[in-house]
Length: 208
Image (cartoon, rainbow, N blue to C red; front, side, top):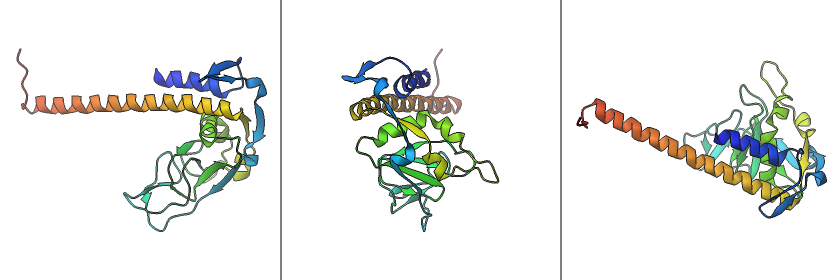
């Protein structure tokens, strides 16, 4: 249910369809939104392979795929950055957001705004919502890949800066709510699992 609500919210906030409305005290007027090529708005490049990949460390190692590829004790990319795989099986089209400094690998694009009027967090949500556009750029071969030139030619919608802040604020709150709900579900699962183990081993008996 929460996933459906978030998808509806993203369609409402990130598409150019629909009438104007007020969000967090800011008027969202989609008629004034501009279109611009991604390459005109950001730095877009892949990273490098670290000398050593660890099972634990100070910084995440982000490369191909939808999850971190390990840890390192140095970083080559600042936080507040969008990431998406450049090549690899199963990850093309996935869009991530790195709040903290991290190590960007050779199979991952890091995307960071170069414009004062483009927030990275808004851009993350926009690209996440439009991930199918990135998937459609996939070159199918021995290893699926997305060319930097093709990715840079994608058009993005640019609301005003106050509109971007309001959109990012609402979607961040929705993400936090979903994260807390997921943690609560996991905690309940662990409690149930522990209780079942106690019952099955006879440690706890239920009086009837």
